[in-house]
Length: 303
Image (tube, rainbow, N blue to C red; front, side):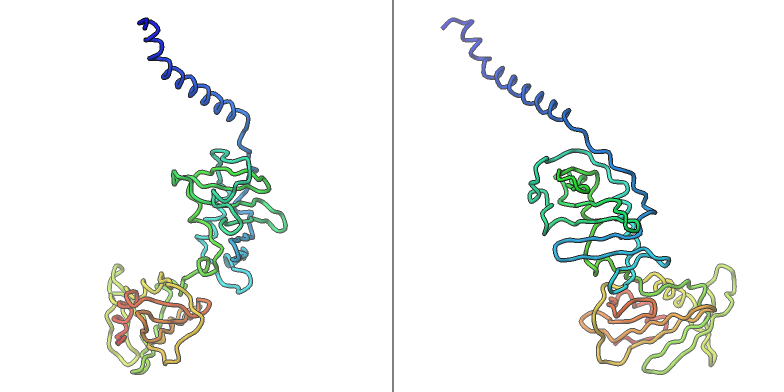
């Protein structure tokens, strides 16, 4: 065979592949030039006063009040960071790509049973409707639907963690709301009786305040300071429907000049303590490890 013909045949296939790829990439580039990502109307996070979240059969309506966010229906307090996170995610949403012009929702986690649909409202005005599907393979993007647009877009960020329609997830799990420095009297009731501790002036500005029993005798100020700090930021593991038919292990009342806060803790069962509080809606679960310093400070034997 002629050497020139042989050389042409040797390079013909690679050249054909390169040409085909060039044509394909050019076509893709041209296709992308035929659409523009929609410009989302601005949405002020502060304007949102209601959020409706749905996923399958689960539905929650969150309403902003002067006291914070509430879950409509049961009237439970909602976790502010979760609701504000959803509002912030919708207000700052940034679309990065058009993924599908056809409604092939199942492959993107945007089918009716899978997607989380969040509607943000101000009064009766609908500000934005956001459908949240799966994370994209990059894990730093999420497939979404916007308002009435049937097309699937890719949005910046992993939005799957920010949205939930489950009331158990949305509830505020804070069990007490107080400042330790506001508490002047601690009344503790156990099977051994009632002890009332009164706050005293700390010996130095840097020291913890002293605590004395009504009948005399000071308690460990540092231990009580640790317990109070724990109680002031303690959160329930989860809420439950009912309490045990047993007497409480500990009843505590924290009294200040303007308010009193009550906490009742029941004996441990199945590695958990059931409890109630004046600052929480319904009974809840506390883990024993969280309460160890509290029991030690107030001389409670959990056994």
